[in-house]
Image (tube, rainbow, N blue to C red; front, top):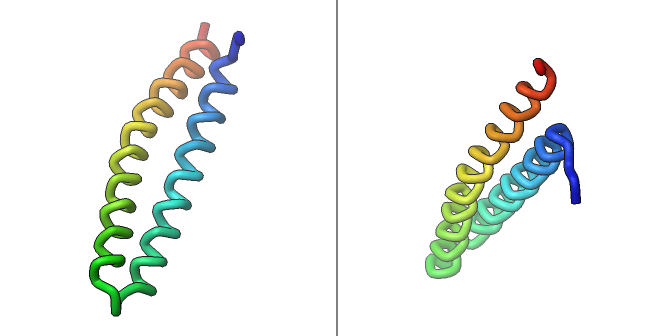
Length: 74
């Protein structure tokens, strides 16, 4: 499949947005689990893992935006 730089950037941005939304949901569930420390810690650990993966996806988004910028200039 042949994709354009704009499509790649949009796709990466959507993936990042969904991941961060999921992270917020995990943290909300963790706050609701304050009386169950084991469950709360598992949710916080999962949220931290999501943040780590989102950081990597941010690098992919940056690469896509740089590619889009080069395509627009050239």
